Length: 393
Image (cartoon, rainbow, N blue to C red):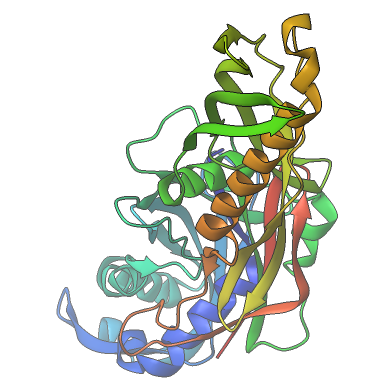
């Protein structure tokens, strides 16, 4: 498991194979000579794929009908052979590879067995090359300047489904994304339309926080404010600080907050004739302030937008020496906090950053597909953001 996960079912793999079959038909036919036997072959129907869970020898099966003509033993052979191909799906650096292909045919006819042997020795290698390097249809994550993601793992899991994990380059120990419920994984294999498939992608809240930290920085303000009351002067000095906003998703409910702290506080009173007297003020507890936001889609992008910051409020304890101007000091600190809230708002309100962007080219220059978010398919789930999207050709 990784901070970013994508999930696809048999429907998605069959969509990829359909796209390859329709756009690169020459990859599914050929001819040659093996052991002085001339042959031609052509896959006459779109192959179909089935995922296999918990099998040590293979994790997928492809059923295909191969029309073969050959002249073994001086006999003209022309037949469509229903065959099953067992293989292993592996994923590395964003590439899905299908290896260890081996065609089987249950016929006891010795001529057919000779042909099957020819297929395995001569046809399987080019077919394997066709299926060897397939860029996977998946969500692309954009994490700001200086950050990138790499696909690091892939396996067939219960569902059945293909699970693909991505990590943020150069970052370790980031909380992993959640796995969708089994019922949702099973639904990835359903679909009456062979030209469409549904997939799911998730990114953990901690992965999003890396993005937030790459966009926003901590903010601080030094202040020295003065006022007066009944002939007494009043003043307050110090520093107010806000941490980078942080997203937290708990049980599918999301909050973005920033922590406000005050430090180096001094309160002052100016008495006529005597002048200013300054005393250190106790540091108040940090306060957590809500950063309001929305989660939405815009075309092919999933976006978090910062919409505002809640009011900042702190309680200060003033020593008795400042009692004559305590109300003024409270007004001064509230004015400082309002000003600081304005500075924060100017810095982050209206900021939009991408969580997902759906690409338009995912199977090579000649193998374009269409990706779109399902209606209502972007939501918070456990401690992750989940996107359900449709792939179509």
